[in-house]
Image (tube, rainbow, N blue to C red; front, top):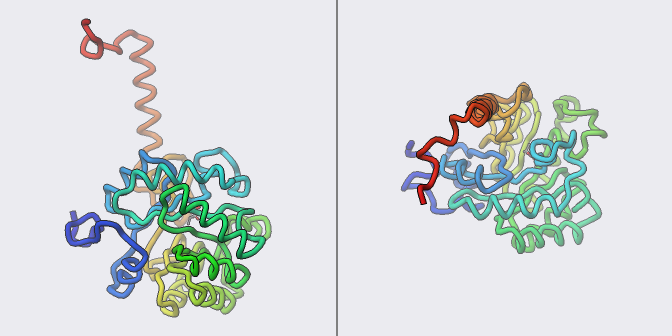
Length: 275
Ligand code: KIV
């Protein structure tokens, strides 16, 4: 295990919001992945991942939707409970799903409080810049760590015209959005599909860490959707590096199992009970 691994004896027992900021100050990269259940959470936590995001990408990855828009608070709660229960060390953040915070700070705070009370997570994330500043402020002032999300924001996919790089023509607005939510109390900002130089500029402008996804190496940390990172499917976005081919391995295991059940070689004697 590397001495920089958060799971090392020199790292904190539980990663907390102030550790993320300290990591930025030390120039130590923050490692983040999504997780949607206890099994995966335990594995990723043991691997030393600093931050686990119960992303509303659960809609695409686990529930078979084309977008994150149908995901509800009721979908997120059991997923977040499983992830939070199984993570001994990672900082667990839950996405506020579409429709659960846009109406205003009161709605946002009510959803965030519900997540904190009912799931055991350590913080929440929401999408947007200046338009959600009051939501960020209300959640933060209630003592709940809140992470922002700028650039390509999947909950606005129909307004943005699908997954496209953001900030090419309006870099100053993205920078203003980042400053606004950081000033309102965001503890970190996810930058998704943002040009590398702009992500670097935002990272330099903020005291809080940026966590990039398709935003280049200049961010203070990186996040990927775990199923993309581990190669669960045949396709992943261009900005993803696949570190394994778990989908293929699972298919092969299931095929071997099916063959052995059909030809009678499973279960063998050692898988049964004499009495
Ligand atoms: O829901 C999600 O998985 C996310 C990441 C892409 C950052 O918001």
